[in-house]
Length: 201
Length: 201
DNA sequence: AACTCGCGAATGAACGTTCGTTTGCAAAGA
DNA sequence: TCTTTGCAAACGAACGTTCATTCGCGAGTT
Image (cartoon, rainbow over all chains, first blue to last red; front, side, top):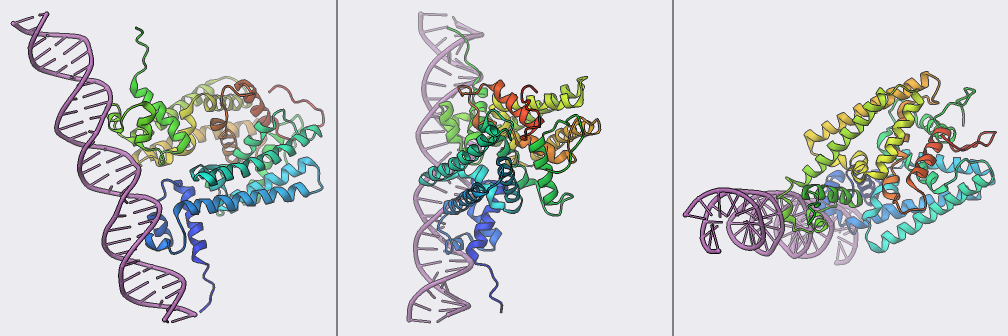
C-alpha cells in the first residue's frame, strides 16, 4: 500500500484549471468538475470552499509565480536585452508546461469577485510596470528597438497566447524548437535582412 | 423629425458583441443584454431567435469578413512580404475598429453549437492555410525569415489580441501610430541592428 | 369623423432546467 | 470514539425561453 496518492485537493485544483482553460470559468459547472475528478458535485465541498475560491487560488498562485520570476531576472547581472530574453523564455516555458498559468493570466481572472479582482489587477500592473521598466532601459541602452514600451509589452505577452491551447508534447515540434522559433521571430522579426542569417538567438 | 433611428436588431447585435467581449458569452445573460438595449429580456425575442443565434451571426459575419480580406490580398500583384504586411494591417485595423471581430475570432466561437462550430472551424482553418501558404512563398522567395510558418502564424495572430481590450480612441497614441509600432516590431524585431535605423515599415 | 382590423413591439408571469451550494446520513479510517 | 470522505436529495437563485396579453399606430372601411 504505497502512500503515493496525491492530495485530492490538488487534483481538484488541477482539473479545475484544465476545465477553466477549455470551456471558460462561467461555462464550467461544478458537476463538470466533479465528473472530471470522479466524484459527485456535493463531495467536492469536502475539499474546497467554493467555485470562486478555486479561481482565486489559481490566479493568486500564478500572479505570485510571475512576480517571483521577475524578481530573479531583475537581480541578474546581464545586459538588458538578455533580461528580456530570459523573461520571454520563462513566459514560453510556463505557457507550455503549466496549464493553469495562462488560464488565469490571460482570460479568466476577470471573473474574480471584488476584493480579489482588484488585488490581482494590482499585481498584474506591478508586473507590467517592471517589465516596461526593463524595456525602457533597453531602449535607452540602444539594445532594443521600440518607441512605445507599452505597445511592445502587450504585443509580446499576447504573442504567446496561442501556445497554451496549441502545444502538446507529442507534436512535430519539440518545446525547445518552438521556444527558439518564437524568440527568433520576436527578436529579429519577419523581414530578412540583406545578408541571410537566420540561426540562433 | 429625422428617421435616423437604426434598426433595433442591429442595435441588439452590437450590444451583444460588446457584452460577449467584456464578460464572455457564458457569463452574459439575456437580462444583461436586455438592460443594455433598454428592454425586458422577453422583448428581445421579438427581434432575435436565441442567444446562440446571436453568437452564430457574429461569428459567421466575421469569418466571412476575414476570408474576403484574404481574397483581396491574394489577388494583389505585389511582393509576398507586402502581402503579409497588408494582412497584418487589416488585422490590426479590424481589431481596433470592430468590436465584434475579436470577440468571435479569438475566444467565444468555442461556445457555438455543433453544426455551426464545425463550420466555423473549417472557415478558420481555410483562412489559416491560405495565410500559411503566403508565408511559405515568402520564405522560399527569401523575403521572410522563418522555419515554421505555423508557429509564425499563430504568433502573429496572437500578438494582436491585446488591442481589442486596450485600444480606445481617446488614447495617447493614435490608431495609425499603434499600427506602425506593431508592424515595426513584427517585421524588424526587438533587437537593434548595428546601424540604428528604426523608422518606416 | 368614427370604427376596427391587423400588426409590430413591449411586458410581467411563468415554464422547465441548470446553477452553486447545503444538509443529513452512512461507511471507512484513525 | 471522533474525524474524514462520500453520496443522494434538496435548496433557492438564476438561467434561456415561451406565453397570453396589451399598447400604439397606420390602413381600410363606412
